[in-house]
Length: 289
Image (cartoon, rainbow, N blue to C red):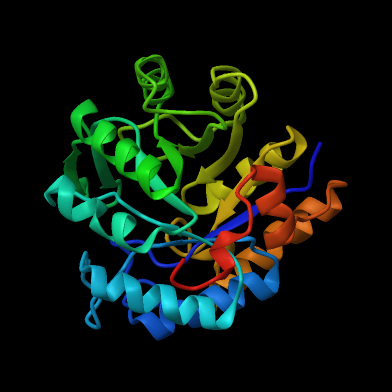
């Protein structure tokens, strides 16, 4: 097994400060959280752009400011999101084309995406998360030209299968990098049994990490570590270090993930080691490259 690569998803688009006071909005706040996460052991920071009021922001200018602010504080691998509901594909990929981060997240299929309250017997954030092959192909072709590694986000088994025609077409090249997102309503349940099946379904030689939603993050992190995989934690996915104990920063969550890795007998990769392990090279440490 190689060293565990820990990613930190810093802010997301749905989480608000009303839910968790540590959620960053502005580029400087996001960059400060990136530094806290990196100082705690994260090699990769996964980033959505937000407005100062907390809404989603897709302007290239905001992403450029985030890029500059993060790079001024840490050499962690920058992974920008492309995921959104109701935003044209060209707008969702413009910052990737212009800024060329080392990695960019790419949703690999469509799904119902919702949050359900058993207490209120009601759905929240009830969306159809549309990611047709035409959009996926556009994103892959843009990332290939820009020299950006696609980090393929798979919410269910069929999303892994969606890679097969794209590999056959030649728009998706090895090394393949997957994020297995588990526990979203509308996607695959977040259990170890399902994780084993997901990993067994990946193309040979793939890099992968698990993303667990809510407190279920922690048993999935432990399972992934013992299976030789990588992990993502962070306030986008989960607010709690443990039941009833809310994280005060992304760093709290990264610190626990790193401690789990070491307790289970695996070392944690630095950003430089993660670049080597994933075959990314070193260009990302130069802002503007």
